[in-house]
Length: 303
Image 1 (cartoon, rainbow, N blue to C red):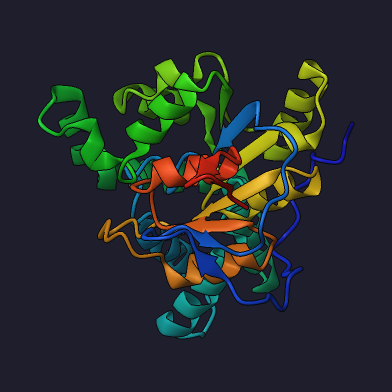
Image 2 (image 1 turned 30 degrees about the vertical axis):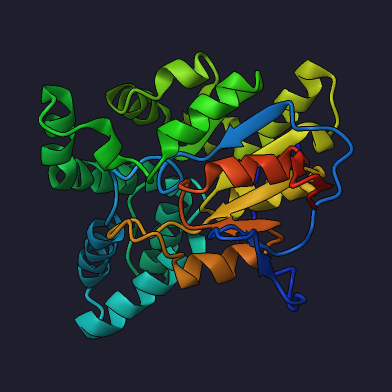
């Protein structure tokens, strides 16, 4: 199957939704009620923003780097105009593998009459700068100065523990380069939950996509999409999960403040690609999972 090789740009496919509601006394927003016949057997998580907060603030590194690259073309556009341009297309492509943002940067360089670098070179420039920005966070985790919980979306360990108890297979798929995902998952003590099922971007962008991971899960386990549950704060994984008939939980995380309130931009964006539920974090993991497993609540079926 090759449907997942190319990651499409963001496209809103849900323009209007009916009234939403919340599970009682929770922040779990039901966008469209689920009608599940069987509980999930396979659960896929995105990484950055969905579990990990190590890279919070990454656009503050990527966008200024792009402005510098575009200024070097000799354009007479103002720094603010270039910043606005880069910010817009970075936001539009957020959720895809990092290389796609760098491909767009190369296209913008070419539009201005200059010869761009290979997008992989731009990606490495960005990663070098990002590693400088987050070096203190990574070292604090390594040294034990900061507990992993402080660098995770709230209650991430709790939901992973409960899912493990429910005997489902967990998967982690990220648009961040795989060697960074493996390293940072270890730092955050998440690797034991996912085992060998941790996947990330490769230099050859056609060799990896979240859709390919999903196709492999379904094929190797001989299950249909209804057996899949996914959590993500990016549009790619939400769209991919919904495209095979799975249930998709949008994690509209407030990465900077961990406030327990959903990020409005993420919420709207993810509802727009078909998310079934929206949560700001995992603090209401128990009623959330009871709902997703269609378990009795006060003697009645939820859903």
